[in-house]
Image 1 (cartoon, rainbow, N blue to C red):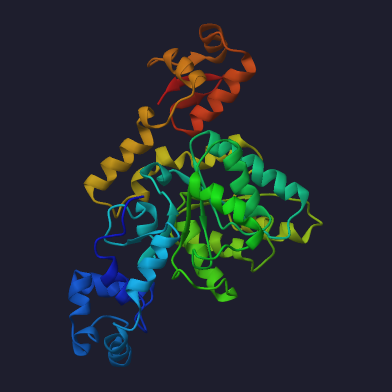
Image 2: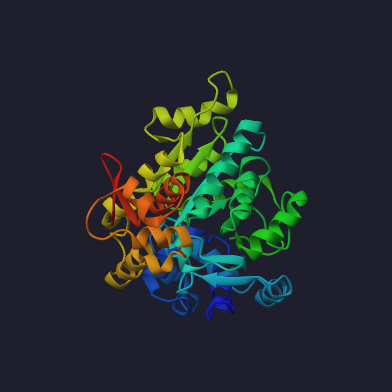
Length: 381
């Protein structure tokens, strides 16, 4: 991942000041233009920022040197954790676009530009065998198709999603509700290590923060914020998974839900989402359809980006050279030109088994490499 952000000492001083949360941090930065300018400002100047006021300004001014930054950086180095702030170009672009992005994020592992193609899979801790199977299945298929799987490393659906991604040799990101010197739940130590080697474990909390109940709802916005879409599998009403779905909707991200048994309490969450308009997902084909907004409505999702950012992300999304094509995918791609080609012709030309061609075309549609037309015809995008 490299070193901490160059301005991390100042960012940590500010974000750990009393009265500074994600929203206030963002407003201060927008008002003053830099971290240095905020830390150098008088209480009267701080009070001029929307939502701050005199009392909060005094708290920020008095407490801005209270946090032991050097101790925090030593701990991060000891645990192999990198700390990034909002001003760092390595900070995940999708997360930066949410209403209240975390001012600093702690990363054990590495976050890559390709992780912008991410899908969150979340659900109940006390899930059924059906829920576990679906979480692993969808995570495996999506990870194999080049998507990064994001979840919260909790027991149940979250852990199954991470394991599904890892079983496909794919990338996965886990967002913790505690500092990264802790692992929660503790029995997931092995999973934590595997995730940090095939993606990253992430937190917005100081290294030594305990996994307290109040830490978990805020981390759900990070799971949603890192992802283009959130899939909910088995969740009770008012659960963390539904908070993640709510955060996804609030930030113009896609929400999908996998239906369950109508007599199971665990189905109430996803079924409620479906009633409210979430995409019902029964198969990989359904996921493909829901994710095709990557092509159709791309501009809507990057409307607040600079031209340079848009071009960079478009290149990432649509440049097939960046997608680590399998041998089968490359074979089929070589059989396609500008014209529509029938699947039978692709089977004949590629000399691959029919089942393999079908599975590979699903993967290629997910990656946005090919487009399907009526009558089982395909063409390059």
